[in-house]
Length: 153
Image 1 (spheres, one colour):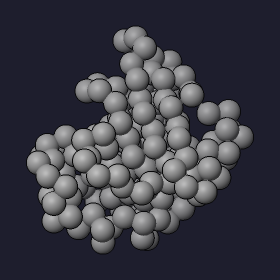
Image 2 (cartoon, helix red, strand yellow):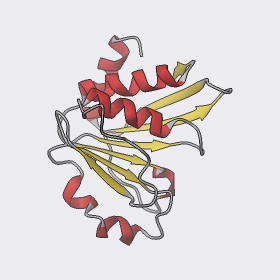
Image 3 (cartoon, helix red, strand yellow):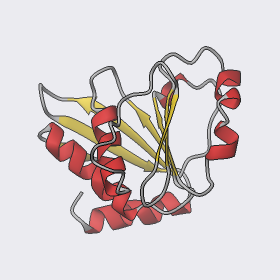
């Protein structure tokens, strides 16, 4: 578990993850509305060197935004997902685990399990404080967690 005292710190943790990310990384984000998932995702985008003038917002209405950086960021938001079939229609299978980083907000809405290198659950502890729980889903996630821990995150 990692504690974040502010949105800036949550962003910074995401940025560090983005800096360490390798092609094919799949990160599943969970947490209640306002828990900081999009803030974390913006940090990941910054760590992937997505241009600062590119808005990284929750793609709740489009379900998928693709941002170009050091690696492509495939940013899915499942808040309005009606069925798992909708995810397939978006081309999830073509995007995930390929040349970029796949980040899925509201992963808890899935009725089937997606393979992921890393699962991150964000929980509110106060107005600005958050708990971030990281769970490695495969060996690549374990290596990434070790690298993050080496950076005191």
